[in-house]
Image 1 (cartoon, rainbow, N blue to C red):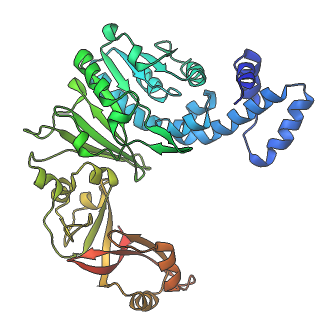
Image 2: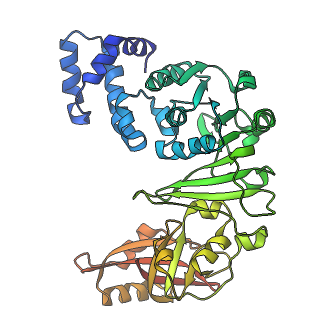
Image 3: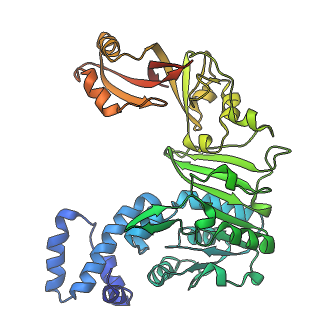
Amino acid sequence: MSSSGLSQLLTPEGMALLDSLPEYSEEGSLALSQRLRGEGHSPELIAAALTQSRLRTKARDKFGDFASSMLFTAHGLEQATRLEVAAHHAARFRDAQVRRVADLGCGLGGDTIAKAALGLEVLGVDCDEETAALATVNVRPFPNARITLGRAEDVDFSHLDGAWFDPARRESRRGRTARIHDPEEATPPLSFVRAVADEVGAVGAKLAPAIDHEHLVPGTETQWVSWRGQVLEACMYFGPLAGALAEGAVIARSALVLGSDARSAQLVPDSSDEAELRNPPVGSIGAYLWEPDGAVIRAGLLGTLARKLGAHTIDDSIAYLSSDDASQAALDSPLARAFRVREVMPFTTKKIAARLRELEVGTLEVKKRGMDIDPARLRSELKLDRRAPHAATLIATRAGGSRVAIIAEAC
């Protein structure tokens, strides 16, 4: 967005034009642009308004109805915290009786809005001038929230009793943008976050989901969060924001799984023994198979989940769980996707194809774990008859050290 276009958009006339635009569509954008030119609007304002209209439509997935009154950048929207996830962050601060909190690296204001909606006084800080300007517009409905341009390192924390960090975790390398997984290389680094936690107490920080456990801080809780099966983040909580999890645990971990059907579940450690947390017993493939959510795996809580489901793993290097019996609660758990096993056979493409034809499978979902295969290529090699009436899931994996194909159906 050009600076001229932004400055024209951030006027009463510019915002009125944006709010008057019809539902955005690629097909109608050219005709709409020509109409707006005919009405005398500048090309810069038209471009800025149409860009915002397109981004608002895209943003509904993350912000729902709030998107219709917000402003975005393409990069900022990509990085913005989904509102449902931000609500969980905010609830930690509310439950810890925090009243005044800084949202550092606030971006377009998703976390700021979520905290303000729960009644907290929120100071949003961002070092990018355009982003801070757009965030100022986005928090207008909340008189208890304000945005300022600046760096987290320059904030005066003496009047705050909480802080939320969203450090920049990308850097340019040889003309390409790369993700940063070491929190000390982020901006600001984890060491600064820890120093603020020593001063303020109630501090949370959004980290990369691929953070190595060696970077976790004693006395904190780190929670991996997934949305519809995608692991979005790992959040480290200090002081009163950290949950009291397994007794005796030095570093607490948890997994929060948020589903598309409004179901959610949290998994917390049930032991202070690392081996018990991570490593379920190994057994054979039973009547049921579970695919654990990625947040559970990232958190290193596969053993905890296995005990919760009454299951075991099928190989000491594979994160699939199985059992011969299953309660309805286990089958319905958002923490893992459940399958009913129909058959198990050695992984041989020709034999798999022949069996799927016998079962009249025309629609096939292919999943893999611990196997170097291309699911799309395998599906092509199986040469299914798409007119066949039945559907199935083919799970290519390892069990007991051998390559196997599991023909299953989702529970």
